[in-house]
Image 1 (tube, helix red, strand yellow):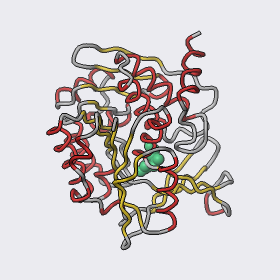
Image 2 (tube, helix red, strand yellow; image 1 turned 90 degrees about the vertical axis):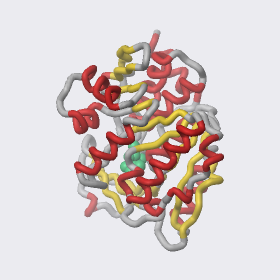
Image 3 (tube, protein in one colour; image 1 turned 90 degrees about the horizontal axis):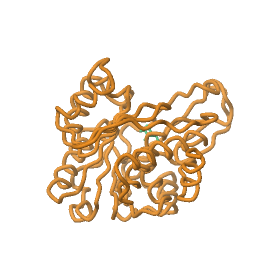
Image 4 (tube, helix red, strand yellow; image 1 turned 120 degrees about the vertical axis):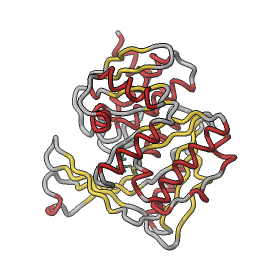
Length: 312
Ligand code: KDG
């Protein structure tokens, strides 16, 4: 495996009409979860990727599994839980520009993930382990699972990639801060957004924020600056990468996951670090142009055409 990821994936219900969701009578059902968004992005770019999770033994669980499998992601470590339901999430389109997210995932099957669900040999088979800060917010056993997975990855020489993905609806600010900092400190590659960095360290300048993460222990840090691109700092280089222009942002949700998929794809293809960050920015930009969390993730041909077009 090139990359293994773990975490919760839900059925995403989006009203077909814009406006308060109480007036919506028809919804489209899609599949979304930060970790599988990344996994699907990588699979579309031709990489070998596996996802580990729990789903409810229900129709939505079966829908998710079929979808993720259909995208070419290895689902051999996903189990069905007969006692708990698959999580749901609604994306309310309050106006054309304003999106609100509502979760129905408390006590979901995935929130019962525990270190016993981990397969050490499976994790050790990967080059990268990708994790997000959503999983530890779901329950104590999920948090323990994340820390156990990191321990196993470190013992096996697997590179740990962490995207804080702060979701304030899921836990208290204090718990989020403590946990996200503790995991960030162990990350070989850390992918915070600017808002997340401000949440953790206060209103510092871009470069100071990255230094703070590195002082705490993170090795390579890429701070995502939204439409402006990203600032990265490794052990031996640093620099800015510009964002790719997007004519119209139709749905920004999932752009950070596209960024992670683009970065890992670039690193797996042995690109120089800066070029991998550029690929990350390109895939992130492409995701924003299509409604849905994964629908805009490009295949290789589309990604290359987009990057080449912008450079000419
Ligand atoms: O990054 C996008 C994800 O946030 C979305 O797909 C749903 O996993 C999700 C979450 O927990 O918000």
